[in-house]
Image 1 (cartoon, one colour):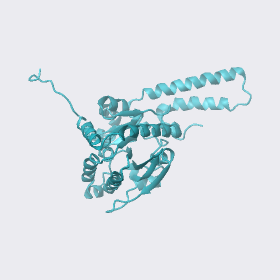
Image 2 (spheres, rainbow, N blue to C red):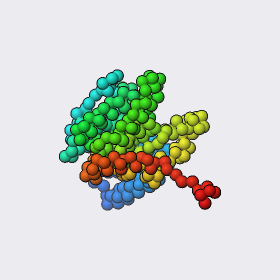
Image 3 (cartoon, one colour):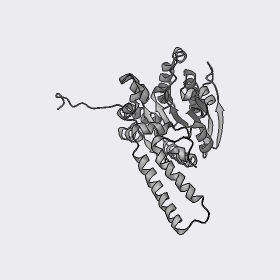
Image 4 (cartoon, rainbow, N blue to C red):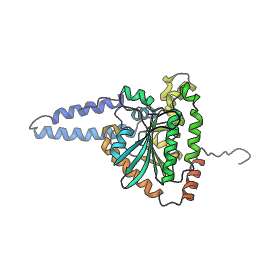
Length: 324
């Protein structure tokens, strides 16, 4: 059965899939019909692989925002064996856009931190579509500091278009709290693994994104600004978002080649929204592998490695007349 939500470039795939399903629903198909079905399956697989291997940046954004794409609560259920949520920032309130808690990953106890967008309208309003307030970043930092005291590794799942841009958030110190998180996460004496599972927009993503191992799902994006925000600044209209998406170089291939991320985690054929279970299994194995590589490192080496990792971002060389 076709998915409830179909992106424009996915429609030919779903149309072919619909025809295939109708043929497969027939009782006692003839040998000729069986051969037709076999060829259609091969064609569908090839077409899907080609479409998703050649997504343009704006199509990548659309996939990262797909309504059926697995979100943080899905991964909590499918990746972790236990989860005990921790609430509040001990100062203002409990921001539902960021969920934190103790979790068990395979045989490890970890601290989990992740953005939460919400599935239906009520949840999205509660979570502000994944746009966290200052109290959300304070909550995240307090729980990560607790993890450091107890020697628990930290897993961060990033999925936000950006931090909440409202007046109240600015009055309560939005930029300050994100900056504090950048500073304090860099000094935590436990391994930190960060994965962009959907959108990774601006400081809202970076506020829980300082890690020893930073990965991105194949069809997610990680950017200094959303394409609509960039288009609004440069061209005064969000209609130019596809042009901005191309200019920002934020797809997984770009991020890996630029050294912004350490790993691209492959998604199931047709995107994570087509197979939540397979995507969760892949993510779980990559998280376990990353922690296995980081846990043997002495604390001083871990901190120095983390410091140098982020100091290298944005480096460039000039070859002017005086250097030639």
